[in-house]
Length: 370
Ligand SMILES: NC(=O)c1ccc[n+]([C@@H]2O[C@H](COP(=O)([O-])OP(=O)(O)OC[C@H]3O[C@@H](n4cnc5c(N)ncnc54)[C@H](O)[C@@H]3O)[C@@H](O)[C@H]2O)c1
Image (cartoon, rainbow, N blue to C red; front, top):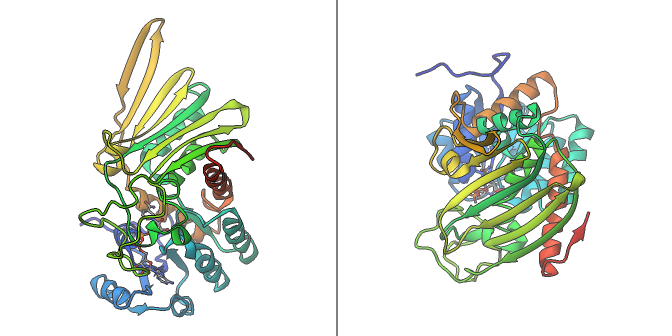
């Protein structure tokens, strides 16, 4: 068994986890443990859940009320893994209680929510990482280096394509008042974060968006997620949140992001991001990277000689998985007192775009100027 790597300064951090659902249990807790940090407490409103995971992971304290976790002075930083409608309140409470915060995506319910979170981080001097863990994924870091080095030339357009067969949520993710959306908020937010990161954070100019809720009455045989504490999974209400979205986002300088995300569809399962550059193109095969958990997943398209085209699958050294990379960066920033690469500024732009996507969709695809 390899020695845990607690990061650059070898200091063990004392951590609290708020919300012990899927992403906490599969992403955050294992990552802190792998990095050798100490999880002091877990909190979850669902009776028995925090207790169950505290026993499983040998975590000393468990609570149903997250404010009790925040009152433990020894906890230095928290991961917030609760449903989206609670992100703003819990993040603000945590920073006001003196904790550094790793907040899961989507950043907040809307732009006003993430602005409140960002301003609280500034006011309290706490370190904030607004959770698109994917930015820290090896393949995105490599892709960004390709963009920054000029190898792709001018990246004038980016396409997100995600099609699944029946990824239909129950519980809070099916309710607009708790999650706001599904295909947009759970399917596109972190892709937008990575794209803006890779392109050097260009300003958005306009958004045109149409959403679909075509599978509202479809009951999947098993609910893959979420483990729902807020509502019964078995309730019979139709799903309110969108399962498909098509959008065009224009950026300063005339660049575009084309979004096609169908979490439920009658189409081939696929998931990728394509960067169109005038010197080269780069495809990130996210199906391979995330769903199949494989190495590689980057293909470079070039024309080395007039009329001669290459398509090269890149080979590179494998890196740590995304939550491990993201949490390692978060902790290193806490130790050094430095801002993270996801300190909330890009998240404000993302939520501005997302607000515009919902507004455009409400108006059947009218262009919204930002
Ligand atoms: N980064 C990723 O790849 C990724 C993947 C999935 C989910 N997420 C995000 O993570 C967050 C959680 O999603 P999930 O899939 O783990 O959901 P989940 O429903 O599985 O877990 C949420 C947990 O929060 C608990 N909770 C609800 N209200 C609470 C409260 N007031 N206090 C304490 N706990 C409370 C619930 O009981 C539940 O256990 C969401 O914002 C989601 O968008 C991110």
